[in-house]
Amino acid sequence: KQWYQRRVRVAVLGLGDSSYCKFNYVAKRLYRRLTNLGAKSLVDIGLSDDQHPEGADYQSYHWVEGFFQSLSQHLSRPLPRNYRLLPPSVQFTITPSDGEIETRTQIN
Picture 1 (cartoon, rainbow, N blue to C red):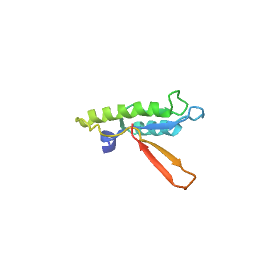
Picture 2 (spheres, one colour):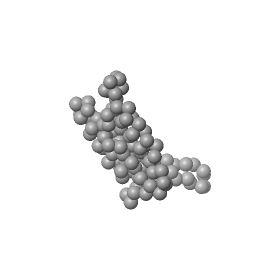
Picture 3 (cartoon, rainbow, N blue to C red):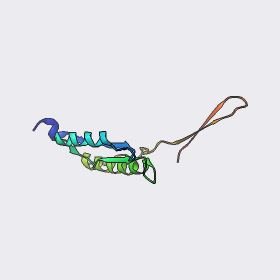
Picture 4 (cartoon, one colour):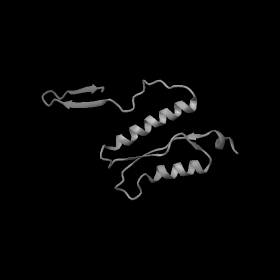
């Protein structure tokens, strides 16, 4: 076996919309090609769907959690839990009287 067939581990998360006939086509094709070349998967392919009732982030969030758990097991050590899975909420307010833009960042 080639070195990349023994050592490469992959994780693929597709961001798509199931209303399209080729839903997450690129992610599926990439995942299939990498595994056919011999790469091992850290986690199952993730197929996020913008049409999901809970929103596209719902599936992505769960996939990312599983990815970090698998990566931690693969590295045989715990990973720090100080990473943020989702960006902070940012809200922009334009005040017409003076034209100033106020930016507030709310971290949940």
